[in-house]
Length: 187
Image (cartoon, rainbow, N blue to C red; front, side, top):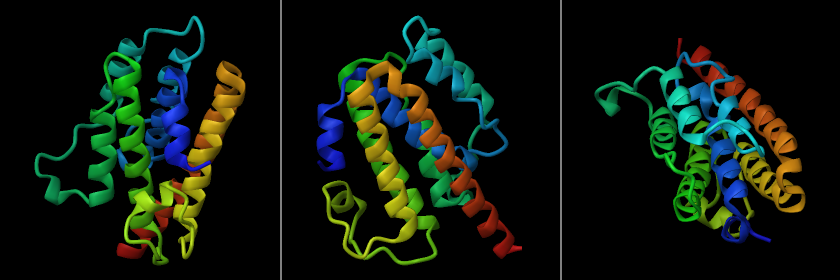
């Protein structure tokens, strides 16, 4: 099943976790914020968890504001900031579906920008629909993580949250290493 189909079939919790996982993996691009700043939002997805809106406000406060002029910030960081800014304040299915879909595209674009190898597709949208020929390694790994998270949540509901969080954490570590390696190359 393609990523687009998985997102279309996901319930509210799956959509929230999917979007949150994409954002969570892109935390290294958001500046000096704490890697665990999004953890309360993950907790709000569990039954009896804290209020989504309160956790969202805390998460947004944990990251420094973006630069006034987006042109001074690299494109990948701008995309990550847009993902954070677009998190719905009220987690309704339509708003979460739109956000999760946008986060999926954004995270794949970020990984494509940061990959040292060329991706053979004209757009990441075709990747989400199942076209994997000539896919660059970083994009392929991100696509697998997105699919895996949605499958975990579809099969296990709330029980899959911990596993989805672990998959996302692994992806964040990988992206942090890529960002660090890229920064060393510029110096």
